[in-house]
Image 1 (cartoon, chains in turn orange, cyan):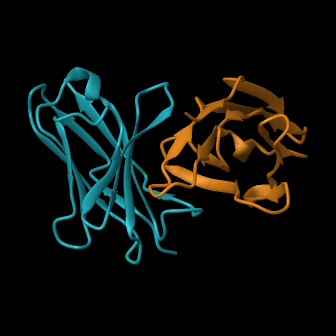
Image 2 (cartoon, helix red, strand yellow):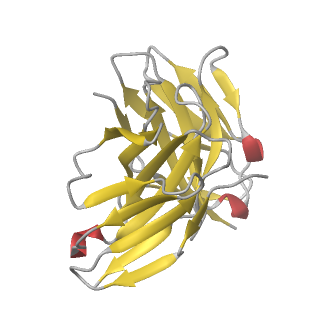
Image 3 (cartoon, rainbow over the protein chains, first blue to last red):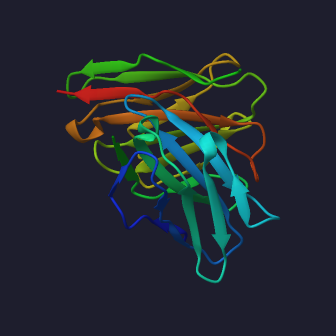
Length: 114
Length: 114
């Protein structure tokens, strides 16, 4: 069975500082990895995805993530955060099976302070 | 930009009542999903739907739940007899292909059972 672990429930950071949100997964098959963002009182928006190819994936709003198969990780990074990046970030894995359902992590609240 | 729309945004219902949550997926999409997020917890897969039938469902999706695509555009989730523990945010999602594709999420319906 697949699972996703986001060890940090909350990450406080000052504006313009770099940030890394950690995600580790477990899967016995090929995986497809996603990061979604949920702004307050809104739905889930895709930030970026890894399906195959280059292990460094760039997404929207200046975010990027690196797929590391040996460490089973897919950490999300941004070199300089803004107040507007304050949101809940969810890492998710799909087995790429017929239904392509997503298994989500517990989420990390990124709290950007001025 | 096409989007998944959900109605209502917030529904309050009494315990034991039936509730129907409505979703309009993106028009050319073929795969449809319901997820739920209990307050403070992670997003959980409920059910996937393809070719007018359920393709996969989770343990949460018991006999109290049903899904339907009644008219080729709407996708509904019905809870027959709501319980307090059904209180959650329910997200609808759709994708154009099952495998290796991004799922687009709606804004969610917050269901409160009193």
